Length: 103
Image (cartoon, rainbow, N blue to C red; front, side, top):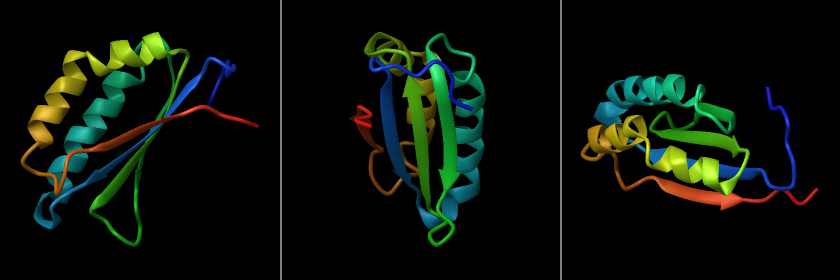
């Protein structure tokens, strides 16, 4: 559920592509990341999706109250730990893109 969206809200779509033999290990790491992130100040939405046609692809759909809130998230120990723990389990580094809602 998304609450308090405004024009300052920062949206993020992050794609994570996992090595085929590491899907379950990465899923566990990402699930813990979601649990820890949802309680952060400024987090409006933090969903983890798994592609049903390609089980090796995960997508984060995020909404943050501001760029400042997102920047704080990017520096949290739990995000940095997830990045370290998944580094050798991914096909490539996560593709993280920021968006602003137009309509």
